[in-house]
Length: 480
Ligand SMILES: [Zn+2]
Image (spheres, rainbow, N blue to C red):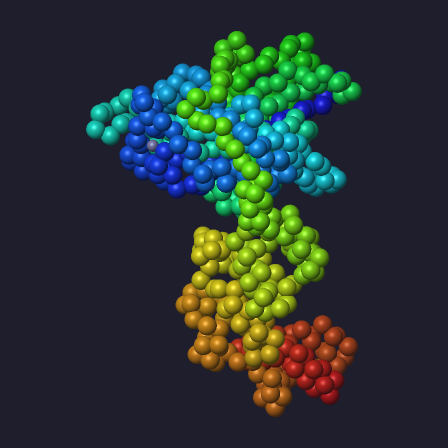
């Protein structure tokens, strides 16, 4: 029998606000344990939560960018469960009437038509604290709780079960990751857990209408692991059914070392969260003006910008995709185009030399020592014939290292291209005299030797001879 996998994703997006969702404590990562806490996020009796407006603004932007409708009156609910990292004994979340609903994203998988993936809902909630096991500062070995993360704002983005393969799931995740980082509402750091994902996976016989029993894989924190975890889980369920077994509803954990998922808890052990509206928080009313104001503030999203690079700047799809890898990269490229004018040439340099230099030095584009206008200045020197394309790469390396302008470097190192015919002719004469045998070969019809002569002339001129002048003069001289 053949099986159809069905996948839905729940993504937790940690919002990049300065302060927590219901109190004024800092959200800075990596501080001394419990140094960023107050009565509200410690859950002390009598402390009252106050909603951070920035969180609502970020949620609206996320919703508008994923084609959701914004709920005019949304409600916070208490999700009740006991765990030591949750001081109040409940998490403030949204249950009925979440802030964003009924959205979708278009995903593209190589070799497939674009596909619409439904987004059921996006809701706001607070994160829990973190348990720390091992050596604790000042109190020896043991387990402790760090509540710095408690009450930091999250969005949970829940997809419809529209995904069918691990590749589709990764494409959806990358698209969502691109949007939230592009909007500047999340730093997107998956290793630190700022963007993490639960995957619901089931399989059903092809042609069946009834969904199979699903397993939920918790907290997968890289695109690669999501792919591995889903593929492993699909195969595990198919093997189980083929062997006459039944898939049970359960929560599973993915182990990156073995590439396998293992059971964490079954449905019987699942929590009954006893959701109810939080009496400490009034319903959140968002009027149409607020929504429209947020819509005006949205940046051009990666999808649209990519298309514009193709339509207006004439770039191939590949270039447009690479340059839209991040918002800062796309900004850098566009600033370069504005200063120079030739989009394809600037694209080649950004994807070539700049990317290579960034990789070599382990820096990211926002810290590039060569600014877009300096890059444009360098390319203009090539346009004017002041330096050759080859020398431009040398000048670029020097710009990267020293931070000097291309003009200054060219002058300092005497790199101006030689286009003067008599100077180049002199070099050619010397080389022909020193290589009489090759001259004979060329004249005897062995035209391949031409490249040898070009190489020799360029070498003798230390790369400064204008290649097109060299070519022209050489042909004339060799043909004698
Ligand atoms: Zn606090």
